[in-house]
Amino acid sequence: MGVWGTGLYEDDYTCDIRADYKDRLRKGMTNEEAMQDILAQNTEVVGTDDEPVLWFALADIQWEYGRLLPEVKEKALAFLDNEQDDDRWKTPQLMEQRRQVLVKLKEKLLSPQPPEKKVRKYNYFRCPWKLGDVFAYQFHTEESEKYGVKGQYIVFRKITEDLCWPGHIVPTVHLYQWIGKDLPTLEEIRQFPVLTTSTRAQNERERYLFSFLETSNRSVPHKYLTFLGNIQDGQLFDREEPDSGFLGYEGRSWRVFEGCFLCWYSWLVEESRKQERCQGDVSFDNSI
Image (cartoon, rainbow, N blue to C red; front, top):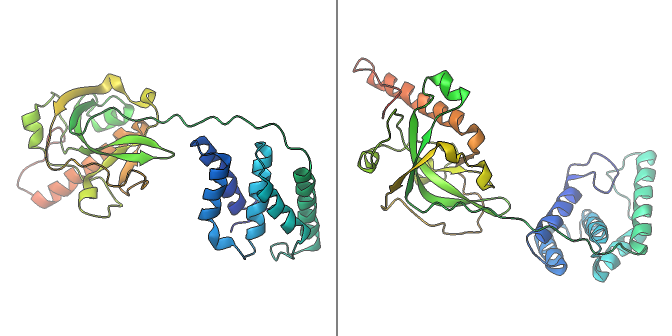
């Protein structure tokens, strides 16, 4: 556990407990459910030097939100009344500073807690695109101008969807190895190879998947997107585990998307040129 001071939240562990508690309330859990879930996630600290700070943090944050449960208060006070030497505090000065922190915590827990605070729930975003939807995206940033493709198009297709913390559902696509000045037909797109994007793929399928990690419809550059139709085939799949979290392939925001795509694409062009050697040039403005 990283520790940088004697304060109640001056270590990694208690900061995580505080953040986890707030996160669970914002997800709609009751106070009791949030507490039980945190305890279930931290069973390994029971009986260790970290157990007291678990109860200190949980009691403090519940008090702050006007939700201090009797059992949490009792546990925290028991550890405060039976304070053990902590080898994190190497000098008498640090030990005294820590003692003062715990004295103030005890006074706080024994005082009337504030009224229960209202917790703002998460507003989850879910991209409305359907599986198989195909879009053209038009380059328009300075990054694309450097590559000489500003105003040209690329295409992608939604293959599945992914979970973006804390619960947004974002589209996961295949990006095609194609750049052009005119919008292609669906039949032409069916012939385009898929761009390899992932550096963290767990299997062959994930090598070609890319997620747009946005949490608001306002972040989507609708002005530069053209819907081309829908292609259904065996490459589409539903998430097998909707609550499994990030699956391990590449994801970026729209803000940096152009630069990422052009970097991957130009690398493929260069590799293709090396392999073809003198067998002809590979154009940057069409399929490789």
